[in-house]
Image (cartoon, rainbow over all chains, first blue to last red; front, side, top):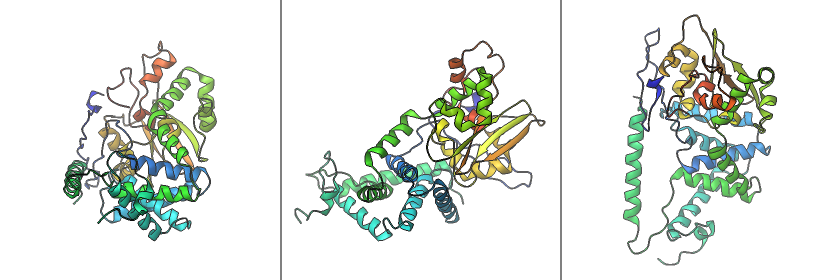
Length: 140
Length: 232
């Protein structure tokens, strides 16, 4: 199947018309590259797997939460070509963490601000610690 | 209007470049601070740090899992299983009877309570796997799913028009071949056992494993004597 090979680029195949004449969206294709586009996706993946593995929620609960987020994203008209998949994964994780009472929306937002501040205050090349975002500002 | 993947990537690239410029514009010239990560990256860090503080997850275990999925598990696991089934009729029987137990012979599997069912392709039956709801996938043997497997297009079209989908993957099946589409769930995962390619009778198990592609084990391709270059 020499026509199957796609090297380094993403190509779109022409959608086939269905018998009803309606055009369905084309399949996104890959070249067998890395499954995680960015490190945060791998971290989010691992969090869900570990929480489930340790019995904090069942995989069935997880699949339902993820499916709901994927559906919500589709309803919002986001491109559902796989590129938003881990965004939905993350949203599902945040929702389950809230439902389980481990951290509510406000706690997540507050923690995010502390991390952002920690990055802004940490000199380039130094490891970023959460505490740096909590310390009083050095100046200004 | 649906944004094509190509547009999406181009837009994402432009947005990333803009963010980069912005980050640098805001940076004082005399001191370079760490660049603030993207919104999702910060949200994951927040979740992780809060869950670690509550003792719900162990950061070392998270890192180990990421490493395993990025470097150790992949379609090669599944390829070994398929090649063994081709050369060892007793194993093939065990694999088709109880996929979970048979892959455990290789040390594969082990978490989540999901059950693996292996589907055998024959000259008259071609199996195709999909997860219409989200993207359940036989991780233990194939690693993580490719981007197209997670797309709405594949998830819906594999069920509505499997023959058309296979054609897009370059696989034209004769009309008398029955295509069976299997919808995975959180508890039930599938793996396709492709047909052994004709002319491979003299090959050893390891040589056969090298021919088996991820796509063949999902059911969107056949195994051929020359593995298509660049295909996983």
